[in-house]
Length: 243
Image 1 (cartoon, rainbow, N blue to C red):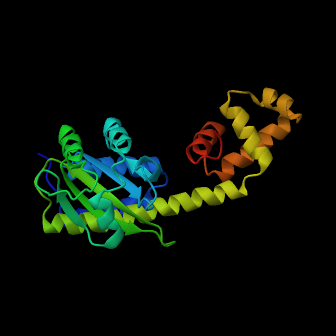
Image 2: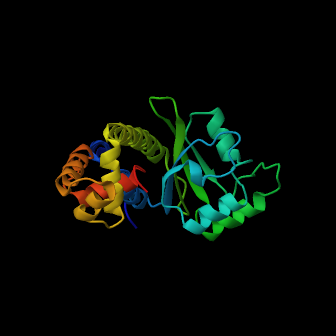
Image 3: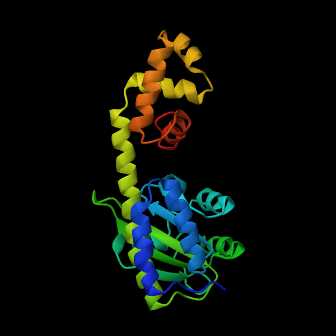
């Protein structure tokens, strides 16, 4: 059994969060944090609007089983979720034991929710509301089948969740600023490189010289804060700059 991290390690975690530079970095960190607190899975999501019918489109990062998330959205469980309702009306963290809670769902799908989370041994869930400086609201959740988190663990995880959600917003803003600074030609060159074209082939396609294509790719690499064009393409794909 993995021991719960001592309070002193929370400061170490906070310092680590501040040093993370990508969503994938935070995903790996969250995986370790989930294991350290003996949970099974985590999810970081933006609070769905009242008209939203799925959770996946509002998810930032998650280690939920793919089958669970797909089934959750297939049954449109967000729509009448008492958890989402509570997150919309309160900023207090809370712990929810699905095996004991009386789920108040007007759609009659309480049994589906219980069976789904029991199947993946994620009946006990802690939720930590968070928000970005822009005002966007969301939450971080840890789920599993361990005993309820202690009051101290809830305080620690709430503090860490706040830092994680804020850091994810900072990374997204950084990525957006990068997107704004790249020129159309630089994006064109990244797109063709992602498609497997060499600089010579890209130059022929775009009616440019090979030297000019390499110049655009080198500038894009620097703007994306990467060390080579392979990393530049990977980052451009990750932030949705190219497809």
